[in-house]
Figure 1 (cartoon, rainbow, N blue to C red):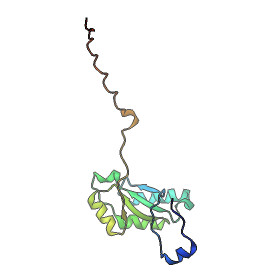
Figure 2 (cartoon, rainbow, N blue to C red; figure 1 turned 30 degrees about the horizontal axis):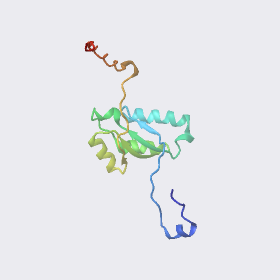
Figure 3 (cartoon, one colour; figure 1 turned 180 degrees about the vertical axis):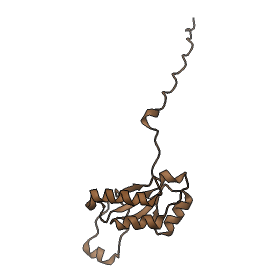
Length: 139
């Protein structure tokens, strides 16, 4: 167990870096039409303005990654900031999407989403083991 530093010890330490966990809002981008995104943001933020005020937001590009659609990141970042949010990073993008986002000083976060099959596509049960031939005991 680590002891907590005393006030005197803290006076000599300029700072401490530690890992921590946070739950962040994630904007899952399904479409690159920024007019539609802008309108939907206005609706969502209008419903809960305090929830979004100064909220750090991660942009998830999973649904656009395979299409290689171009995302207007400067406009998207501006829209989010205009609605009081603070875009902090992106994840699940193509190499090009992540490169552009990084150039805008957005953190590139590790892909976290592991696609799961829909419940209707349940995996089939494993095959039943084959019956073993009976062996007679020796006489």
